[in-house]
Image 1 (spheres, rainbow over the protein chains, first blue to last red):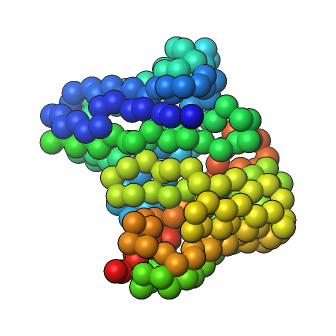
Image 2: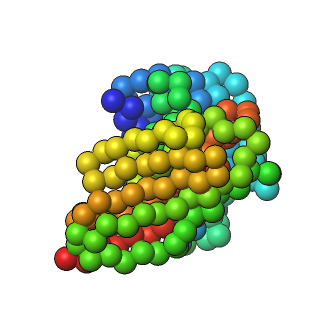
Length: 116
Length: 110
């Protein structure tokens, strides 16, 4: 149980284009999902908290207009990187709070974004 | 501010050589301490949740323990497939947010 999928696993795009990443909880409902970014040899950096049916809460320093988050259902959250630039290249990982209520998060497999 | 410090940053063990990873923390009100395993290029895999000092959890060759200031992940007779980065994280206060440590990169040599 508590499986989270993420799509695509890898994307390469040209500078200036927008990229959408999907995060799905497959076997449970997730009222809260999280989006992280991870640079090489660094830990996870929380970008935003996504709550179903309401606006996402962004961490300090994360541009809301650049990283659009939509959590339209209890099983799907999307992250859109708008007008991507090479500095946006990174490993993006989503997670969902598990169904047990214990606070643990279950992570998707991640999306490797490369902006040329 | 909540803080999580993991040590060592990297650990190299021979197969069968038991050891422990450390996670020291400072927190205003602990609601849970989590251990994750992360393989290269993949998302973290949940291992354990600990809630209170004295609590222990086990899974195969891994055992996690918790005190009021730190948590240990004990690895008994590790195998090469245990090689990964192990992340410690804590959940405090507002429940929404989890603070991650930088991780310990474990390499088990056959």
